[in-house]
Image 1: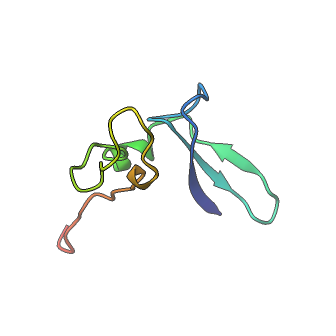
Image 2: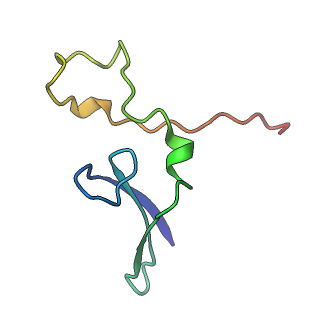
Image 3: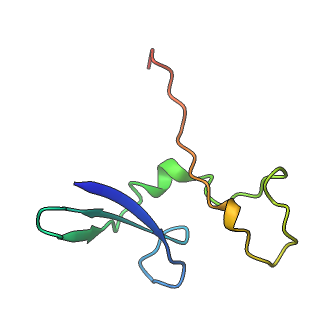
Length: 76
């Protein structure tokens, strides 16, 4: 099973501008998540960052689509 995300804000089933999906490589069966399971772990996607927002506002910045995983210490 593979987990992925595809930038597509126009789709009504996108969450935060992304489609969150799984694909079974053996059957090519694909499932789009309809819950907030993935998007809640990636709340910082496309947040403005001074170091990476070098393109003027209103223009797409291809370097802006970062994915941030929440930090969990090993003791948790």
